[in-house]
Every structure is written in C-alpha cells, then in structure tokens.
View (cartoon, rainbow, N blue to C red):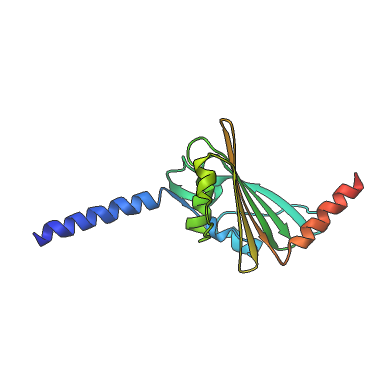
Length: 175
C-alpha cells in the first residue's frame, strides 16, 4: 500500500514539474539594473553604437530559452534599453493567439502580484495593472478589441528611466 502511495506521489510530482516548466526561459534575469556582462551569461549580447549612452536591442525568444515547449512564448517580442552598461527598460509584446502568457511571466518569473479586476475580465474588457518593487516599476496591459488581443509587460528602472526620457525628448526636438 505504501509503495502505491509513493508511486502516485512520484507521478504527481513529475506531471506538476512538466506542467510548471512548459518553457525554460531566463526571463527573471532580464530586469533593470543588470549589466551587459551579466546578460552575456544568458546569451544576450548588447553591443553596438548607441546615442547619448542609450542602446536599444531586440532579442529573439530562442536566445533566452533553453528548450521546453516554446509554443506559448513563440510570439513574444522582447525589447531592451540600456544606458551605458546597464539595462534600464524591458518591454515584452505579445500578440495573443491563444494564451495570455505575459501575465504568467510577470507572476511566475518576476514574482509580481497584480490584483486583477474580475469585473473587467468577465466583461472581456482591457486590463491595466502596475506596481513598483525594488525601484523597478512593472506595467501590464491586456488590450482586447473585438477579436484582437495584445498584451504588454514593461519593466523600468525608476532610478534611470529619466536618461531614456531625455534621450527621446532630444530625438523629438531634432525632428
């Protein structure tokens, strides 16, 4: 009898682990404050000419995922903004086919807890949530319009975002 219980527990743990690790990506390591050198450890190489110390880089999901089932994260685009050597902003954009994965990435990988508005969910209305943790602001938007759905997750350094805003203002003034 005890042997059967152990087998059931073992099978449950295996099924839970495969469910929890549907994708094996390094999202939690991509956050404001990390250096370019630290990101090289997860296959992100941010080199190039930047203006005013600002460098933007788009990365492919395949660069930061080690394997697993990438179906849920396949349509996720990742944009990084660096000021000098440090990452100051991360933008995830997902045009949803089936699963709204960015909310799960915020929750599971970044350990961010957004309070969801159940009334908006039930009415199939767009959602917007924000919070601040450790001098980083997290913004999640789930846009719903007709049959089109998109979600966005933005993480910004509250300390360093001013540099990027000044950079954008200079570009706008130059036009």
